[in-house]
Length: 291
Image (cartoon, rainbow, N blue to C red; front, top):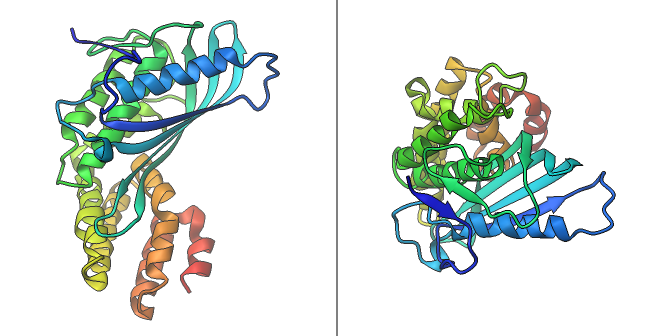
């Protein structure tokens, strides 16, 4: 088995440029040293682990953020939520497009002061490192999918392997049929589900065929993005409450509104109707901003 250990001496030109924030809004702490040490341990683990066999230069690292909101600390047990964001640059312009904006409500882990974070590929070792490694591979997978068709499969398979190994832990977030079904299990299950393959096809078309082309031809690029929404609609028809659709629109809602504000009236209206159908909770926003 291959052992990954978070050590500050490891080279720092790895795949991720991950910023870590830990909030403790409802917890009275006289000394934040332990929280600061936890933040540093997570940041080093995410940024110093070699997640792939690919060579990344410093300016190619994927920009991402982990926001931990800790609501309970009992001895060495931590509970709360985790927000995961990642973005990728758009060709030819000084703009980064948000790829992921996930709120994981099943954050539970054990961590002791100065504990080294270890990830053993294929095995469940620690709650915290399994969660962080899972999202590292999801970030890598989504980024790769945005550049080439199904380019992230190898990374999503790694994320799925973590899900399978973590199911023996008894920690929430890793199994089907849990009260909160929008969990890690469901995320990778839907991404790898061949019946929902158009989701990943849409991610590629939206970014590589769409936004990356807009510096040269705005109308052509926007037209490809419209086609990507048609692919998303097939996913919606198959599974209206799919977790991946929620993730897509959470990340892309404002970007789509800004893009189609400039579109001709009929195109704007057609897209607005499609967005209202797929992202029902935000119907009023589309009606107001895309009128």
